[in-house]
Amino acid sequence: MPRAVVAPAVLACGLVGTFLYWRFAYFLRDPPREIPPGEEQAVAAADGFVTYVKRVEQGQVPIAVKGNTRIPLREHVGLGVEQSGYLIGTYMTERSVHRNRAPLGGEVVYRWHRSADPFNRSMARMAANLLFRRQPYDQGCRYLLSNERLTIGIRHTGGSLVLVTQIADLWINRIVAQVDAGDTVRRGQQYGLIRFGSQCDVFLPDVLVDTILVQPGQYVFAGETVLATIHTGQ
Image (cartoon, rainbow, N blue to C red; front, side, top):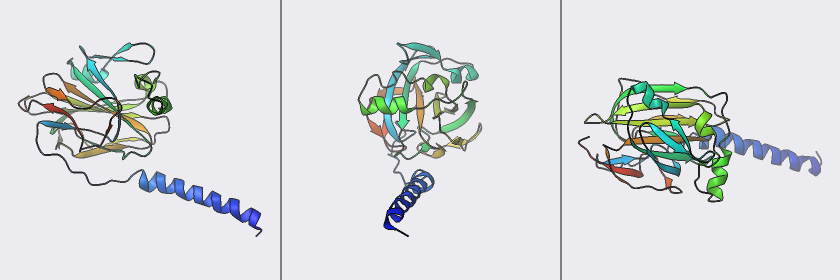
């Protein structure tokens, strides 16, 4: 076979092999994590860049899609309660570990799935905002309003409710959450993953939060990075 034909063929095989390794091995890797000691520390639910740390008032949160849009947190509606607190978003890049972990321990009391409306949008705008340091990072990111999401509610010791929301990207295969209502999770326990690019949000109620320790643009690691210190009695 002429060299002119062999070189492109080898290159094509190399590219295909690299993609398959990334898609089915590197992307789904599951490295061990050291959970920091101390039940007064809420840990990150996902690897990736913190995109926002937002105040949530009366079950609503401002999203900078076009100006400031106040959207209802439908996760709260299903629980029949409205809480104020903090919403911490983590954007998972193509190089991030895509395993999700419980920020705090407790009983899973709620699982809520919302389909895309009407279809999943790409998260490329978030990646570009992070790359070029355009803040607020969620500016123009319409997937925050429309994409498929799956939320679990964890009832922490003392009764406070923590919500973890997995948000799907355009090219998503599926959201995986291997827990259901009635299950118990430990702080830092792996409970699911999101295949391909995605985002994971953690809602911490005011009654629980002592100090928020992360800020937008910071890279965090699921189960290891401390998002906030909390009041352990709540």
